[in-house]
Length: 223
Length: 223
DNA sequence: GGCAACCAGATTGTTAACAATCCCGTTGCC
DNA sequence: GGCAACGGGATTGTTAACAATCTGGTTGCC
Image 1: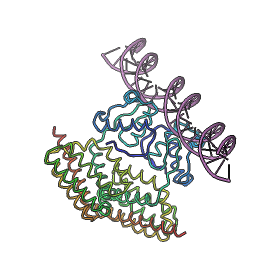
Image 2: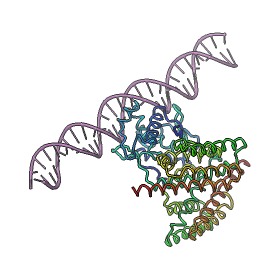
Image 3: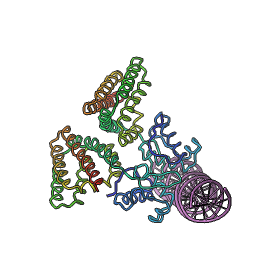
Image 4: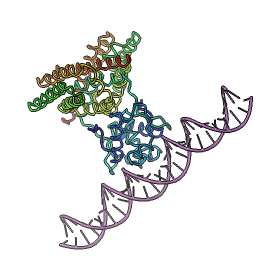
């Protein structure tokens, strides 16, 4: 559940990093909210040194910003940045899809199609939470199939930065069914073994997420 | 000169980070070499805490690896990893080229073409060092023109990981003239304002670097 | 001679106290 | 009343000492 990027520092800091990151993802820490070291020490029963190291790492991951002598706060992500992140995902996951199309075995194809069926079920049941989860599983599966570790690390990093937005995109009316269609196409082209088409489809899918983000923005300004 | 990624931590650690990073890039610290904290303290006259924070950041950047209670060492980069990094660069810089093709002004076109002329001169003079520098300037210019900050951060990170290899690629016989040709094509298509073709050309260029890397590997095994 | 337990030096991990900086309410003056 | 200097409290930055762990060589036994 907890993005497992990077090598281990020490145990204590890893615990704090995970806790704060999850807290941000789940919205328990709001964008812009301050994160005083003393509070984190009390919350997670860690030493100040550990908290300090954890904040440094989170800053490096881009989800926390620090100002000298003024502490850390949750970094707010603008819509423009969410768009950029999704555009970057589009090209990197496109690369993964292309590699996956070449490398995947018949057994992998079966598992991918299974995930496709699962995703269809979540749309049928209008289960937005499950939709998001299976959605992630599909992207993760293709990223794993590609065997491209560098791309994997980049995607880990991008994901942690933008997860807050993913939930909201799935809430757009009609979005899940569009997303389902696109995912099924991606899965089929990966199974077909054509790297170029697989890449193109994956990119098209994520660029449609970019459109959805803009639509989300329009809705927000309307209110 | 010094890759300027990331926000500022404190001054002292930033100094150590830059120093060690440059040391690795220039080959003063060899891959696999140990980096004892005490040595860095003595070398850069910094406190141990600062050195420690710096090592944590360098680990996060992927150019140093640490094992608990066993210290830090320069992370060796395999050829496979260099290939992966270049493949990732291909798609991300492709994105930048596409954006740049749309955004660039007539003045930008002029400056780009100037860089192309400079690059041609370095090939004419067989000046490999200057070739590498102008090469970087061209890629940097396109990345800046794109205005895509997320892609920019990703490229910064990729670059610091693989700089050791860049020098060597330019040393392959005939490589500079091939690279020159490709760069000129990229520049012209960006100036033409067609995002799709610009992206395609940039990707083709970097995938040809991937080929060069493989060739480098073959040469190495021959010796 | 070979091998396992052991010990000293070196190296890293952790903690706690000290110093510097900033924020914000207060005071005194014009 | 408005404004600038001041000061206490809170928060972060830095340093130094202490504890834990690893490495490599040595000793003693079989």
